[in-house]
Image (cartoon, rainbow, N blue to C red; front, side, top):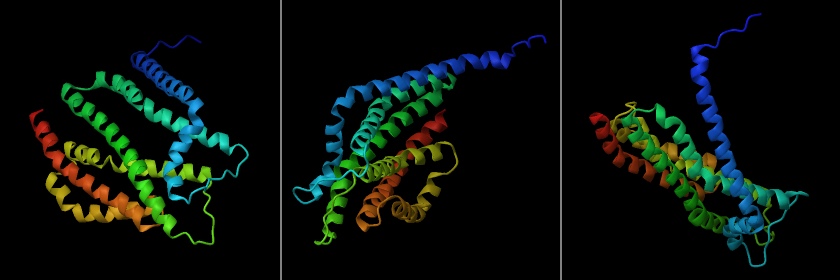
Length: 247
């Protein structure tokens, strides 16, 4: 059978696929390099992650590991998570290098600030959760622990809880970016966003009740920042809407 001639579509698509593969390899390599550099400090990094919980527990308390390889695997997961976060700016730089050539000048002026802002806001959410929320929540929960029990959290359960909370607060802090994108795309107006305030408040507490532990303190610490960040988005929207009109 005669060989089929290469179509123009396939010929034009192949360079983009090769570039995408190259940038994915670079991104993965960056994560691996950071991971390998941090591995010697895995135990200390887990201790740092566990500090908010340990500070809330009575003096002399320790966490437990119920699995055979859990004392090894959980610190490795912590290092992998931290490696990804530290390499994220480079990963996003690779993503930007791939999509930027296909954007118009006015789209670049919009997308680049949004990528930077979303990254910084995600890190801010994770930092807020670690530095403030954990200390308040763990101390609040510890106050309700009966004196007849000995609190010894399992490290794997603790890691799962921490990861969930980091994602919840990191995504929550993206609210201003979401608001700006919706307004910039013309899907909603500023007036509509302002009228939606009551629904946003109710939705914030519903989301907080779903993704946080079943205690009032955790829910307040997620719902209140979500509402405040929505208001921040409303303040920023006019700048981007005005820019849209000039483009």
